[in-house]
Image (tube, rainbow, N blue to C red; front, side, top):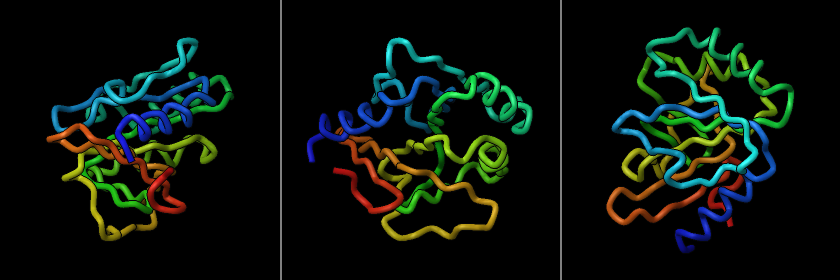
Length: 154
């Protein structure tokens, strides 16, 4: 599937949401806004760097920022698999954050191709799964979107 098709599918998914919880990417993380176009009228809450804030406090701020409307959380990670399993920096920051926001919120993980595992990753009871994983090839910029319910999104 061509890169623009994957980006179109991503943007189509995001178009039904009015509030977005985003992150400030580290140099090893995909910059979400390089690959997605959020609706012009979107309300965006950008979380500060994880290590600087308490995940429970940030979850409260994100819930308040959502105003109770459909919200999409855009999440980085060090490793993902097609089932939506996410491994981060090892401290559990995003797992604690996600455990305190509504499960109905759309969760999309973003990573580079060398951070994506073709085999299932181990998942602990506290791990918070993604609904989709958007993978960017570091060399070519090609993208792939995986649904945690059925593999490749088409």
